Length: 572
Image 1 (cartoon, rainbow, N blue to C red):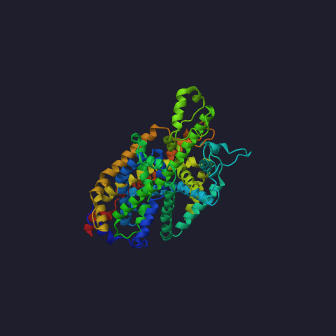
Image 2: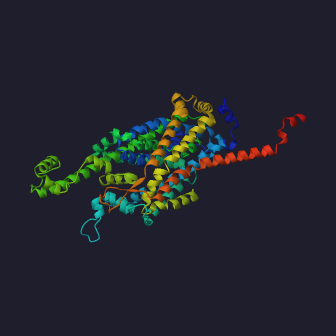
Image 3: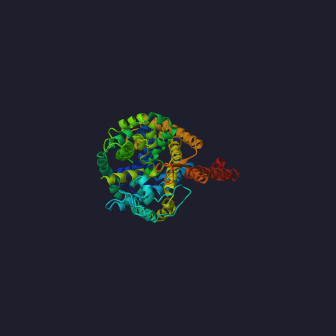
């Protein structure tokens, strides 16, 4: 498999249609496109909510390990193989081995399914964008009830921001089994989102290259505005401490390591096939190693850069709820013990509470004093798929055609009242196990089928130097072993537990805390289907190729070709 001089031979034998493949206008356009593809909702939306799920800093440690030993090696490999073979994802794996042709189809399937719910998130963004031109902002205050005697109870128990998200935007149902109706405003936003995608891709690489200058740089401008505003909010420091302080006990949870490993694929957009396609439009004499490091480091920087304002605002929001909780307790104590107003303050609340609890514990117990803990409010301040929307709106208060049509039609499920629950399922199951399997077979195909020595020769021909010991060790052993271990652990962990989801249920006794419910059996079956369906093409294509080879072999045995007989050629 490892043939010397393969780079030169392939250059000479390269088909003319591949040689005439379109190219990027310049290197900046290519890098911006790769960064724009890699940097996205996985950084601004998925990374912060995983950090919040696992207590902030505890998630950063396994993420950094996965980045070094999984993410960067796979990123370098995808950019290099696409640039060398100058084909899209399906063409690359077919050319390496016909038996691996299913890899490209699997990447396409995952990209399609992930694109469905990512564009739903874009629809949510449009919904908030359209409402941001109002004054006052619709998520600033709770709406009045029907009798105009007070505020809507659901909003009073939660907050105006949460109410706008769960009720005004999603009109969410109390559980996944209650589908609800299509929300027409979300349907319109979803249609607008897919129209924007169609416009950007209508002329392929030409429109992508031009649009990328705006679509990549503008989010950094918005993030910077949020960053400056969020750092000036009271309590922002508590949120940042929460983000960067690891809870070492959390690292014992295998889910943290599994989610960190799979998050790498979302953050860097690995195994989706897009990076292979983008690099295939590159000139072949290009330093793909440097490109991989630039894209990988910019990507990781963006994840942290996006998390800082989010957690600063979480700190502010948690402090507000914490003080609101204590103010309620102060009011109860003041009324019950006939103390003058403003004698009990937030600063001396703990002293007064301990005094009353020691002198008259039965009276204090009868007041149903709430337990106010800042750490609890940080843990429960916002979670799940709506984290970025809830957090950023909190900050604002204080500061081509057929494919698109098909995708829009399928994605209508996310506009139902239960759509947010289904989006969570797609996020958890489409983007986890399938990406691990695709990445594993990608690296096996390059290292052990295409041949690592041949691959090294190609990189040396393209960049002028051979890959160093780090790339050699990760490609040959570390990365495939880590992917295999994570996959096995993922299957074991998922098999041992019954999956749950967080429901927004106003009738829940502990509302506005999340009502944790188990998925029904039929929904769990769909979860398993979404994990298996994208990768079923890998064994199917391999089996189809093998049956074709077997059929040809049997036919040749039964009907030998006389022209292949050496004695026949000798007679001639």
